Length: 326
Ligand code: ATP
Ligand code: FE2
Image (cartoon, rainbow, N blue to C red; front, side, top):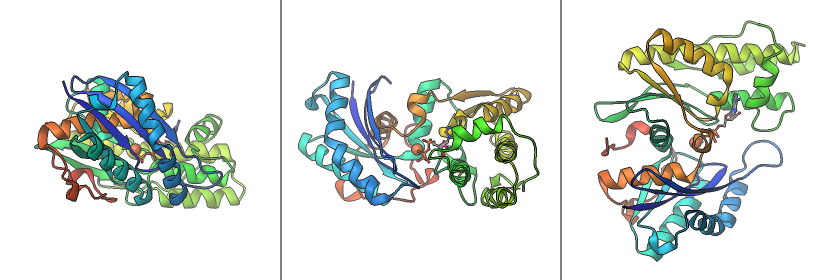
């Protein structure tokens, strides 16, 4: 059995997870940087991560009832993400790997969300709908590698909801509060922007903000934004499902917590005899367990990441990953 310690540091969360090669998660310690106001300030997030790294490694080992010498592999999120955050994770992982004399493995953050989702839900070959604060993508494994079938052409859906919430004075993350407001709202027409299997949210956000300033009710705008954006994504997911010939849909990322969104996707899936799978909350958001488990897969398929290849890659897309484990 192989044991991997994984470090996640792509954005607001610094987390250390430990997994074994039998698919058991032994620890998942984490801490999230919360800006006092506004969005993430990269230098503050980096400061947060570097000050907590050692403590979180210790608490993960304690949670797993292991000592440092039991670790066989050190994995880290190599990208995509905020450079100031990625660099801290990479530096901590390199130092730990050198100190323990154990192989280092760089992991793609998006692929890690997908692989932990498969592990946690038991789905095998899903179409993946990854909808978070920083990402909106439809992925599938086709002929041995992940392909991005559709994505946002501008901002991510979570970011769109968060930005609208900020206009209403709701602190980050605004998604859950928007869901609450939406339950009391009525329909207002907003732009519906689908191009093939791609979507776009910035026009919807701009129009919603404009209508808000003209006196529209926040509940109605919250409701209409949800209905419009979720319908768009349900439409492109259905198209991608048919295109890729898959029968499973894996929902990944914080926006999948939204009940109205899940309802729309469930109805569509049922009509297509497909099944939806939701990643349990513990592994749905950014965490070290995702990186530890995927680190084991990458190591099994491709071996270690040499020190000179361990530079962070802030724009690393899932379709650029060499998938050697499937
Ligand atoms: P990544 O780095 O992978 O892009 P992230 O940290 O930005 O991830 P997650 O933690 O996966 O994102 O998700 C956070 C996002 O999910 C926020 O934008 C938040 O507003 C949104 N969200 C959370 N709950 C809900 C909800 N009930 N409805 C809609 N959006 C939600
Ligand atoms: Fe993430």
